[in-house]
Amino acid sequence: MPDRGTVQTEDSKENQTPGVQYKLYMGAHSGGSKVDVMRYHVTTRYFLAFLIRKPLVGITLYQVLVDLYERLKECLSSSIDCAVALQSYLNMVRLVNVPNEPRAAAGLLPGSEDVRWNNGWREAVGMYEELSHLQESADISLPTTAHLDRAHLELQARIHEAEDHLSTFYFNDAHFPQEDMSPTVRAASVRFRKILRQIYEKEYHTWPIRRGRPGLWLDVILVGRLQEDFNALYEYNVDRKVEWNGDDESDDRKDRALLNSVNALIFGLDGEDVRMLGVLRNLDCRLNASHIPHPYPLLPSLVPAPITAKESVL
Image (tube, rainbow, N blue to C red):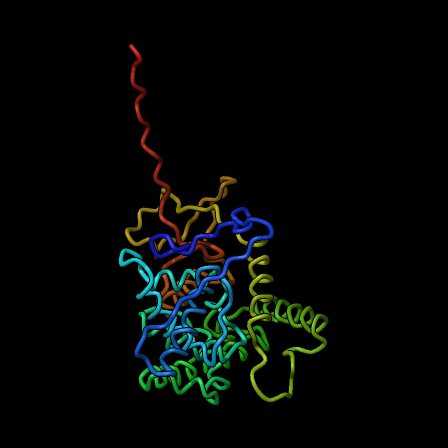
């Protein structure tokens, strides 16, 4: 049952008496047309499905959500937020995340707009090509359709850019220009990229996958796999437990170059062949990102916690 707008899970079997059946009749309002009576009975079924947390059945998801929301405002207490209760129910029946379900996304997006949610947008952008040909897309407002079209084009451009980088594992914004590399660094970069390519060619038989086929080859499943692999590689190679050397009196932390490690070693960001500080700083500035832990993280100095005096028990 809903409690402050949230659907609570409860074991209904404990409250049932074996061998006893109950029938509940909810009559429609008098004076209505046949269409009104039919609509009342249909929305009654939606409301009962909401109460016992069962799936909904209707022509379109958007129309179901509209009818159910109106019925909730009629049947529930005024102290209950019907929008929150409906969202809680949709979460419970797994209708909030609808990947690979364009009809559900096309219905969820306009339903979300009506109650000022932010649901359905991500899936609708990712499936815009399939969604735009569906009858359900007519329920989406014209401004939202225009935003969807623009967001879809931006997403396609970003995926193309990511595919170009991942096909060769060369990232222009995170690498040194070839002319600025020493022969040693250039050779190490080429070997590392070659190893990565060999690993994924062995895994997928060709890299990039689906080479020569139309459309994009970078999908959610592959992105998740790459994220796991590179995160494991990062954790293996990166020492996060470093701090700025206290002897460096530079006012601007971004200009500091010496770090202390937990093993008491003092080392610099820039070596004879590699100028890492400039690369990391430029990458952060281009992405408008704060200096999160990098291979040599730009972190503030360690501030010891104040020692609190123990109170006497006497």
